[in-house]
Image (cartoon, rainbow, N blue to C red; front, side, top):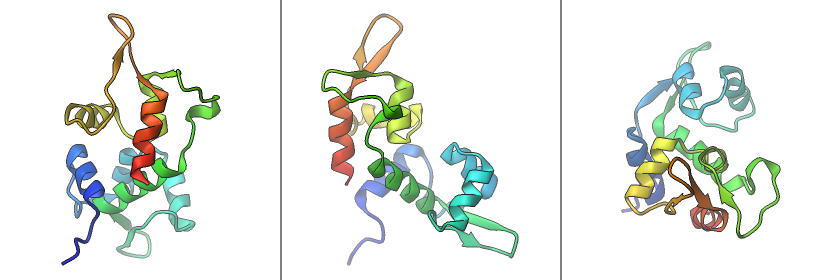
Length: 142
């Protein structure tokens, strides 16, 4: 029997620490997606994110709907902050978060489990990731 969710979606949910059928209010969803509530409402109006209509004025989201939206955005992003991509470029933590749409904690969990490229120590207080390794990881998500 076919599984209702992809293995990738299930693994990402586990690494983020949420259940696929966990329900989120609009405010919780906007915090989860790290976007303003107005932007989330615009996504709903444009039908770019799935949601559950509870009443005329109230909508909620299942965890799998939010994760599916995150995965869709990961696949659509190609370069961080419009900067030119070079094979030797090192990305800082913030750039990796923007490029992948994942939080620092989720990146750390994926990295610890061997499912994300390893960080590179740049000095005693800074780390980075190779741009090409992040691009390779993103391309495997497609």
